[in-house]
Amino acid sequence: MGRTKEDAAIGIIGMGDMGKMYAQRLSDAGWRINACDRPENFESLKQEFASQKGVTIFPNGHLVSRISDYILYSVEAGVIDKVVAQYGLSTKVGAIVGGQTSCKAPELAAFEKHLPPDVEIVSCHSLHGPKVNTQGQPLVLIQHRASDESLKFVESILSSFGSKHVYLTGEMHDRITADTQAVTHAAFLSMGTAWQANNQFPWEHGRWVGGIENVKINITLRIYSNKWHVYAGLAILNPAAKQQIRQYAESVTDLYKLMIGGQREELKRRVKAAGASVFRPGSEGQDLLLKDEVLDRFSLSNRPREKAPPNSHLSLLAIVDCWSKLGIVPYDHMICSTPLFRLWLGVTEYLFRNDDLLEEALDTAIDDSTFRSDDLEFTFAARAWSDCVSFGDFESYRHRFERIAEYFAPRFPEAATLGNEMMKTILEKTTSNNE
Ligand SMILES: NC(=O)C1=CN([C@@H]2O[C@H](COP(=O)(O)OP(=O)(O)OC[C@H]3O[C@@H](n4cnc5c(N)ncnc54)[C@H](OP(=O)(O)O)[C@@H]3O)[C@@H](O)[C@H]2O)C=CC1
Ligand SMILES: O=C(O)C(=O)Cc1ccc(O)cc1
Image 1 (cartoon, rainbow, N blue to C red):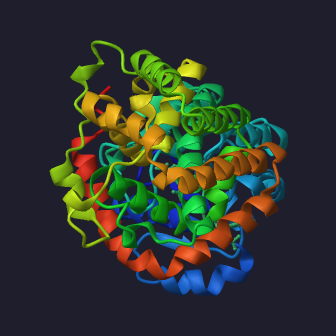
Image 2 (image 1 turned 30 degrees about the horizontal axis):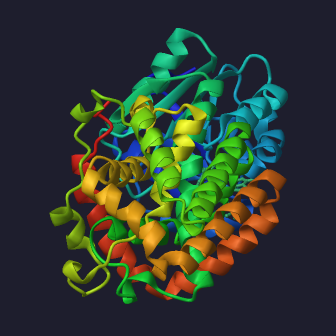
């Protein structure tokens, strides 16, 4: 068994966005990589990596597994069992296997079921997308069935990312990522659904310009320009996620009913009580504050912000209500947060730490009917996404996701340029160091 850069080889099964990123970075750091995707992608992948020193492309996972010392499965979460069943028995004797899928329960179950007993298991999860700089981002390591020495070996391989290693069990990982990722995605997916249902590109509409709105729009388009299975997998396969997404939909519905019922005092009481339980005294120290001057630079609209009338911010009021109902203190999870979660928490905090802005949003929700139809669509959307996840139906998830993605697709290029710039600037101010 090779355990040093000179004599060890790393296997990567699944050369999609994340697999390629890993292959690129690890080979740049001097590791020898054996990689494959599905057999039909062999020729094109071989050509793509022809000039990448240290990367050898193979036609399938058997050929990768039998000669590699640490093998990473980087495939869709929904097919992990099938793929490990296919290649697991070809794993080199004494090797270590891990996975990069976003939900660990099915991944670890597949390893236990299909890998020979002499094979050790150390899984990982980079808590960011493939285009984000790995430096300083959280990287979860799961020593599931392995010696300390083997964990050290995996750490030495992944150390070149410069990520912050977070040590968890598979179970803890799934609970925390349900809190951070699943509800965050549900909120942005619902925003996109509502905008599409009302047939509007929000930034072309006077009501959505500047500040918080830029973050909502850029993140929503970023999610819809990605692969549906990433979001479907981590929501549908993670049991804790279902409950959280359901609570989010319930919070949205409850608050919307208070709004259309004109129940100003009850709405304010409920939202402020939720705010007090989430943003506890003392948490002001975590300076996540996203300032308008920064946010306004990333607008897809060319209207000046003074012209932007107040918004009811139902999506943000509901996330705080949801966190409060579930007893989640989002700051507890900063160590394990993704960039999107930090942005989401950042804009939420921005609203809740500004009494005037919060008061204005709550009064707008009661007095101003301009937002009613958008908030109605948003409520429908949050419930529909929750149902879709609860039913556990990948195909209907895919169908919903792709229908909405198609609507926004013509705008992806401009949103991607601006969104990347926004992420970079804002993330410098909202790092996971703010624990
Ligand atoms: N994208 C992201 O932001 C992040 C994703 N992840 C997780 O990482 C994993 C990979 O995601 P990502 O790279 O984005 O997704 P991709 O769809 O880009 O990559 C998955 C790759 O695995 C291939 N594959 C499927 N079956 C096999 C097989 N039998 N043998 C070899 N290769 C196979 C797929 O081929 P084909 O497309 O032909 O099916 C595809 O190329 C997922 O589990 C995801 O949840 C984790 C962190 C971030
Ligand atoms: O930041 C996010 O939430 C993303 O959308 C990117 C992402 C997707 C899947 C993961 O498992 C980790 C990160």
